[in-house]
Image 1 (cartoon, rainbow, N blue to C red):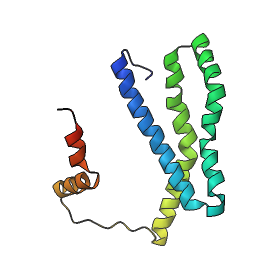
Image 2 (cartoon, rainbow, N blue to C red):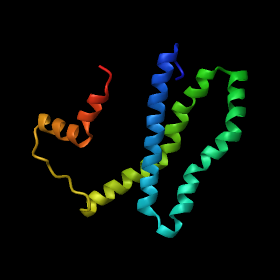
Image 3 (tube, rainbow, N blue to C red):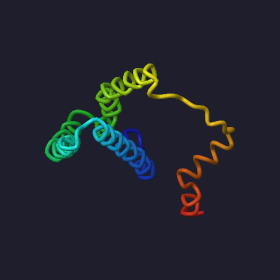
Image 4 (cartoon, helix red, strand yellow):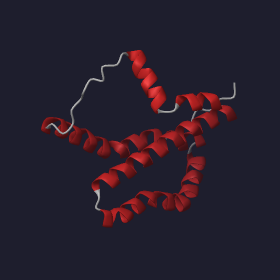
Length: 138
């Protein structure tokens, strides 16, 4: 979004942005569902939505500040730095827990025995690729 020069590029950037944001929300909700007690889960899920409340009030002021002192592109570009930095603690936790689980034998990597072509067809079927292709405006 920070380097777009036309509406089409901006729309494509929005697709990538929201795919990533929804993906992060999904991973965070799965993480909470797997690590919290049922009686506490609702409060933890509510905490993950609290940034949207803050954005309602802080977003316009922050946007105005970027416009006054910089450009709107830096408003988007700054999050290219902020987002990975803020995600580092989760990445570190996932990485260390994954290593720990592999050492304890909880996670084992088994070979599927499929060729590359068979794997492509398997995942194409798993993700319902046929119906996706049928919906494309060709």
